[in-house]
Image (cartoon, rainbow, N blue to C red; front, side, top):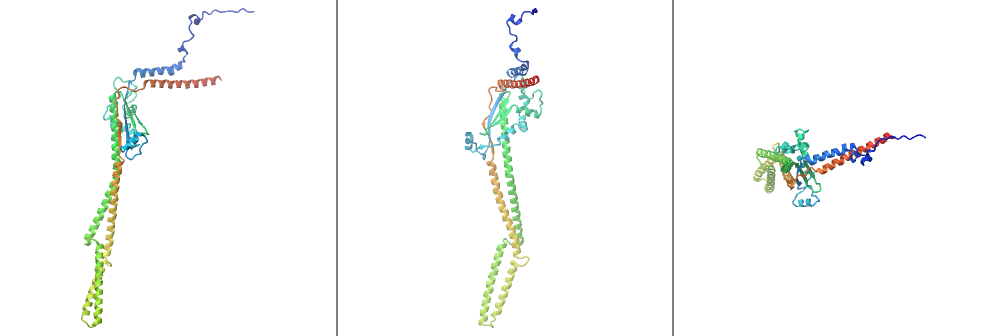
Length: 386
């Protein structure tokens, strides 16, 4: 039997002091502190003590056209009662307000370098931030951080929200953006009216020119041929020939009666002379109507062609004029309107940023990242042990 050897190591500290082996903070993994707790504390310090508050000015408007389909909402029916219905052209106004052209229009009125970066502003909040330049692209990206435009498809109402570090500045920028949108709508109306009416006016002008040219040709023809209406002249010539034929028939009947009663009467020679004279007159009148190169028949064809051209040009002018009137009415009917429902407000207190929401969002996001990383690391460690 061997002796048991005991070595004295001294008193156990935990038993002497009554303390636990480790504190609560020592049980938290350092990775969790580094990935979740420390960044969340930094974000909380920034949002609670450093970040500059922003004031939000909000306005509401609709872009309407008289011929658009009415909306099913109560507001849409109410606006329909005053002759206005919803229009999808609101998206055009949205894009323009935040576009380079819209910002250029604002820049002619405001000094954004002063408005968006006042004294005492933190370096992460305004424009330009320390890593941004002062280029036009930087201004566009920076201003879009302060402007939000939303659209309700059910009611057709658009909401414009502008943030700034001063309540008056937010209201002024919101008002300027709305005025730029109204200017765009007016330009669209003018361009739409010009495009719709321009072709109709051109067609009307061309038809009027053709009618004037045809009328000039017809007038020149009448002056050259020295009569107003060949058709009337032909009718008169035909009537004259008919009258002469009737006279010749009467003379022949008279001669036949005299010859039957007195064959040797000296009146027969006189009647024959008259018949020959009337027949020569008939032949001359017939030659005037047709047969010769300068006869009335050839002139009548030219006249009828010119008259037909004049009639066609007159009809084209009438149709073009009607189309012009219709185009002008349609342009007025399709005119767009930007109607303000709520004017830009002047905020009384800062409502942005949402401090606690931002802190909670950062904490939850980092917590999810840590949980995913921990699961991946646990899976890799188990795989190595296996």
